[in-house]
Image 1 (cartoon, rainbow over the protein chains, first blue to last red):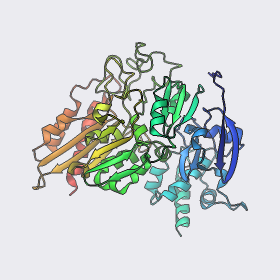
Image 2: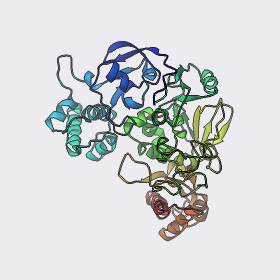
Image 3: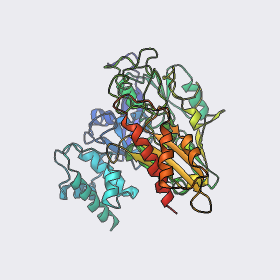
Image 4: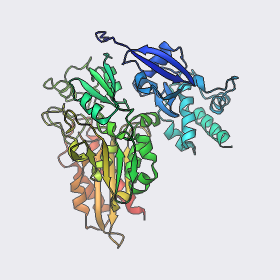
Length: 164
Length: 327
């Protein structure tokens, strides 16, 4: 049910992938809906919309979070990175993106942006030291196709490349 | 999700004042509040965002105690070197909770305010009866599917399980929660449902958690959090135990023991009967297994959750024996 009795909007400035965006949103609008519906950044996916699947993973101030449980208003003044912000300006893929391609780490691809954003952070956190650790620290990203073995292989490969 | 008005607090005082108004709720990590607002369970008129407050996210640890600012992220506390060395059970409870993303969002203060995962509580459109949501409306869980419901601390009004991990470790080590004027033991902060299951915490209008303090001890230094669940990761506990152990200088007699259970009770559950039965005794497997059964004193099952009554003592015993093996 939508109750529009309090449809007052608030003005926000969001910094996404280094670009500053101005928008007016209702306070209940999540970062995920703001990205997809207002800013046309549809790489971030909506899966469960309840913080259970990881498809909406983005970075806020360099840390992976779930955009579906983050209010857009909360992250004003923070630095937000989405899947669209990973590749270089010339289109060169990041190490994790390239590793996902090389290891065939997806099937339908819907969870992939979230997997990749999670993997970038997982490696940066130092939680990609073994396959066991990768599985534990990537557990918040579900893949209904079951591409998990290849996802682990991609994260392991990218972690080695980043370290070297 | 119903819309609400948004207030961004710029001081603790402003946050307390705004949150004391009718219909107002504090917003920290948002992992419970935004989720429950989408479920139609939480219907705040005003959301008071405290995530921009400065200085409330510090973590300090020395031999005598740890102080966790209310806004410290679960992930940061889990990875903190001082927490890992002086309070390993706290670190382990945290990194085994939720997912990496949720732990980066959720704060330790907010984590204490986490609501139950009872599926009947979370689903008002299909289940109108829930005494926690609507006092007096009844309990859909009693007589329903109860595999994940509590066996300890239940009442005729509510059998919802407390799902958190951190608080289980906190009650084992006598941690306190700071609410401004009042300081409460975490054990007393959480309430059993009784006839008022809608009231889960001893927190009053205008109060806000500012910090959690954990006293250091030999048992806290030699501690662990064992979490058994339906899948290996990213799942709530079927049964869990936070255990701390201190041995006499003979290396075999138990001087101090702390035991708390998760996944089986309506609140984080300190198992003092187990502790008292083993203090002063020699640590051996038979004694530990026998004493661990005392954790289930007063347990009542509702059919499908009966397994917890068998499982939880095994989890307690395994955790104590594991600590006994470490030098």
